[in-house]
Image (cartoon, rainbow, N blue to C red):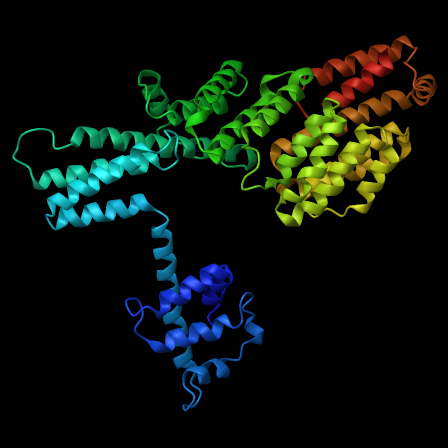
Length: 490
């Protein structure tokens, strides 16, 4: 069978299959009755289109009941039907793009010298353009199309006087370039932080120099994207973070929810570089709360499992247990992808129980889980390490941290370098704290009794470890480690 044809049919909904059937029956697109019959025969296997259940001979005889089976004939018809289905996809996509239809009409009218038709369609296209939000993701493309078609048309009317729209065409091209190039540069910088790549980010310095001297008041995305770029290039400089946040609050009404959510993501990723650990979660949770109020945190009523986990953790760090419990119950069924929903369920409940100091319940949740995602495995192991420490099981914890270290080493090619470093800092810092406790009988007795260390040697070592951790970049459970050190020092 034609695998690409079946794959395409599987991707379609029942409503799309019905529209496809009408499309294939239309004599304008298809004059071969065999293709209509073949589609009907294939759609009998919807929605799964299981190739194993299909008998090529049966399909062939539904087309040619009086002929001997000829596989080559069936293969050719399958290929022709695939081409027809691809044409249907193109038509459907074009039907969803009214501005692209305008462009094609303008191009046709200009080519046929139908000036009145061209002028009417141009007015219609400009009117539709004027109704778009200033931050609409395809607004620059449509604006460029209008100015380009107008310039092309005016060239045919050229009397060698006037501008023939070249200036506006040039400006529209600059705007389009910036609104395509800036997101690409931001994506490249972001990708470099995750994967060991070194992109050649052409035009970056020239663009920043240009934008420092040129304003684009009708295109609010340009200053926002510029600020994102500055924030990514120099994430440690607070002014870029706060300027992006100010611009975002001022210009939010111009953007669609998905676009607005993307800008907030840049802020979320930058929080760890701007705020000390004492204020990190407050700022992050405030960003999440703001997005919930704006109604942009969920996309089409769904929430990604990573974002879900981050929201839960920030709320727990601030002690908003009731809010987090309600959030898990209300939003759990909206987690995507569905394959991650079970992992997210166990992990987030385990975190909730842990922060409520119900360590046995938290451990039970983790031991029931069998996560497939590498980052859920890391989260599971990290939380287990904290539970062993809270339960005073230092011997168990020592062996566990050895296996945890080996796991990170074995899987480091699958884990972002920043995450590897974060978990290594956590393990090394926790290991140092455990050694400090176990090195002196009095320290161990105080730890078991939930008392502070009484020896001057222990206090001195705790202070040194505290300074070391505080000077480190934000890493997993940094705040928790500092709190445990504070308890032992009190």
